[in-house]
Image (cartoon, rainbow, N blue to C red; front, top):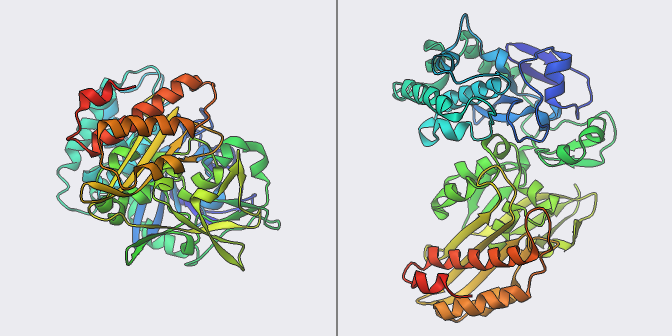
Length: 470
């Protein structure tokens, strides 16, 4: 495998499943990248991943504790050491001036995330606060960090359309050698449909690894892996007629950056903010969320409501399977071990269609759901022509509420109808009491979130009446 680590080209024969975090610390002795939670939650191990996309060098932040070096192949990896200049760079100086660091353990992750923010040519679409939403500090207090970020945002306001890398070099944000990376990446980049294999015969499919490495950290290092993340045939989001076709390795960030999604789901940014963090969204694949089969998978709930269709392949034969039929039981899929998801397709909602996603968790951000739910409604005048309602956290599998969805067809939306709908939904779920809430609490949450769907989508409904129905 070949990739560039800071300003150094790497050629390694280590197992492709080796975690990037362990590689930079124990093989390259770059100790600035910290070991924290090893689950992608704290951001102490944040690195930047640069790759050529349509001949443009694009950088995204990632948690190196969940990234195998197989997924680094052909890319530019930047650790905290890679953003150093002579003296403090502009980001580091802003942190120092505002007292935005105390013990310093979390600081490298913040600095790297903000360097990625400065490298983003579209950073005006993202705030500096958003860029560090996956970085946690336990002792400084965030106000000083926010003040430092405000200085960085002020600097970027002077960019005026200038190329991000050139501006960062000229303004002491990054070292000058960053200007050579694009041409150097051409030499190490994977082929158009490149993939990296371990030294052994394939047995595990791996996308972004954001869940698999949490569950099987030690076994994945030497596992037999087929890497899917870098296969161009599994990437991208496109429109064909009235269908959206996604490669299975499309990430959550790809959704957020796709004009197809942002045009047809105007509230997408609000939904995505409830899902993990920037670093994880940059790595986590949509298909991986499906195959993980968590009963509270946010993307699974999103696409269940849209009646997404899956193209499954074993490398030879292909078959189409509705996402609504993928789950046979807890962690039990209608998928053979030799099959992987190749594509995800769904009908793009019509202009008159309505869609909403809701989620409640113990923390607003960076947390898994207690209950989540999505709804898609097609209207014919003031009557529901078709509907799909999904819910997570209310049973052993991500639930499509078929009877509840069917109940809406041919009806006008009223508060009485919503009350009846909620009662029917309660008969289709079987939540259990666990760390995320009691059975009673989860039933109440789903009822309230269904009300939230209708309050959001039908603002003419009498809200006070709806909220006080049981």
